[in-house]
Image 1: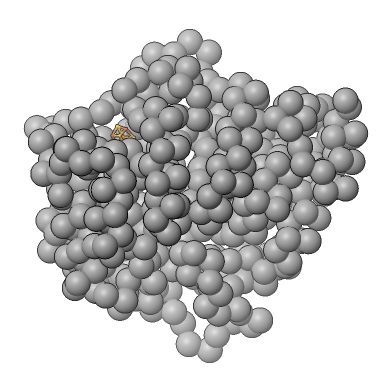
Image 2 (image 1 turned 180 degrees about the vertical axis):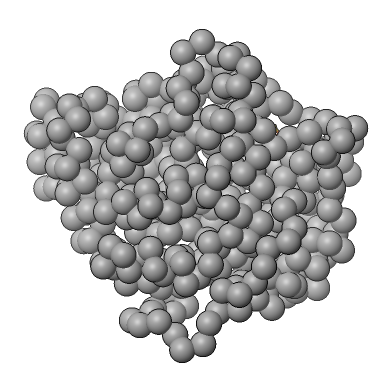
Length: 386
Ligand code: SF4
């Protein structure tokens, strides 16, 4: 099949196989405009011209971690000078401050601290929710849920039930990278397996805990790996319907140990801009009708490229973040906070309509024009970087 024939099938509403997605990934460079057009049209038909964002705060409450993923420049050993562990009171203080600044969500993710009390995540969730009941807790990757379950001696299912009962609203579908164990063994030996990632995600969806879905690309994976990853997410969504969105995440190589130390022969320094655009477009075409929200990541790609992704199938600009630590540690230079007015300006720069959403994509407010009053975050000064 030629790339144009695959695009014809996609624009006619046909569901692309993984093999057909590979044909698109490997199409000549001059196919990029056609790919973008097809994905942009698919986006317009499914999502219209509204581009959403969420006002949220990241709280990476510790960088102490028992694992050493090759792409991670964030984690530290527990005796390391730069290690930190925020107390529950500090997590609550930051959550309350975020809500006072107009945030609707806090995103809690962190390292896996050694000798952690099994109920730690559950207790933290309960305490934060008790102190700030209006906040949506978007917290704990499948890796963290599995770690919490194993530290407590509970099943994943029981642990998920307890998190939900403690007030967990939704989960980030991170720790996915590429869902192929041969790739995972190269970039992050000892990380959660593909089967366990799917087990935690499906268990969450079965309990009404929705999750995002992600893919980290531009390191050692092949186009076939990316296509199979997208097909696996689509199959999971057909079974559970629990994914809120798909977030392609560019590998940030600068400080990543596996790149900096030359640990993996042939590793790429992240994807090129053209590769990012094409990956967004192919994701939109692969996932259409199943996962309709595709998020551009300003923190990974930078706002200008993220805005171009909005013209290649994406319909969401992510969150304000306030304290982004993980990509920044890996060498991303796009800052820790994107103010709501800046997000809206990027969205308007491509003639689309900005709108604030909740974590699970409920519309909060559409901005036909700019509001008279500045958002509290528009004048907030970031002081903490952890
Ligand atoms: S990616 Fe997560 S689990 Fe892996 S080393 Fe970093 S903090 Fe630890």
